[in-house]
Image (tube, rainbow, N blue to C red):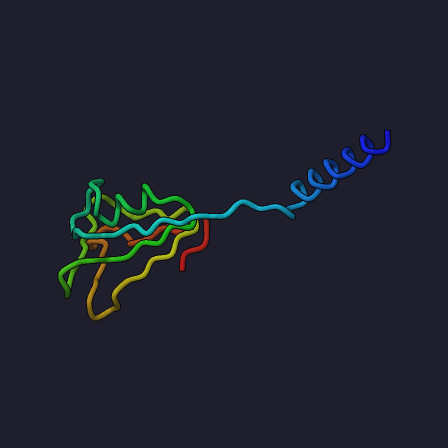
Length: 111
């Protein structure tokens, strides 16, 4: 009878730890690479990588520099936690084509 009570106590403690965040699952992020200056929903474009990124993903650029991305499909909406690692102001320009702002950060944290 005593073993049964101990077993229940251990299960209860593990369940409580899980519910209170004492047990966590690892978070994985993907690195998404922008390889095209086009503004389409094709793999390798900034718009595609933003739309298809999961929260926590990292977006990097692998372009021929200096490079310019001119938005033709409207504003880029960022609505999840993302890290965007650009090559720097002297190497990459993203512009709204005199028609729109570039980014709409509607949710999440962007670094």
